[in-house]
Length: 149
Image 1 (tube, one colour):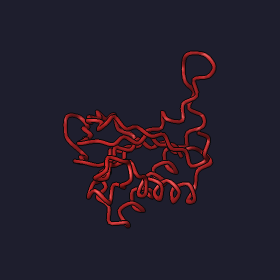
Image 2 (cartoon, one colour):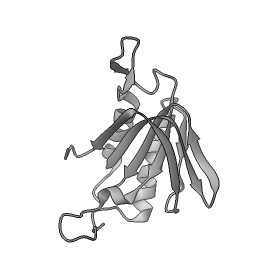
Image 3 (cartoon, one colour):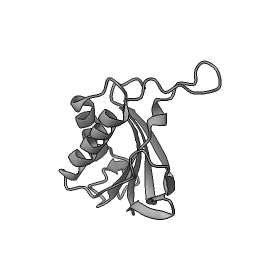
């Protein structure tokens, strides 16, 4: 499971011009699910997202989590994070999980975050979405449940 995590002052997702998910201060998470991912990956990702200390404390150090600052998360499914463009110019997506299992694990991550009493907004799985955000910092972190980077 891979994620691009951005600290934001706000973010929203629109589908066909309609806002389907929004967050104020918090994290926008673009989440890709790989074929070999399972429950352990979903738990690892939810734990990491909930505990990730990317918000500044009063001393200006990144020591606070999204919960510590009363923020929320906007989680958007993005299979293209599993794209492989090492050969040629057109990425291949064979490492991405099929839609059914991918949606199940995407929803599982969202549920695990919500169980931690974190506000969780979502994109629309398999929809063409417009994601609008204001990256705060900018702060952008890459996560991989298999620890490939």
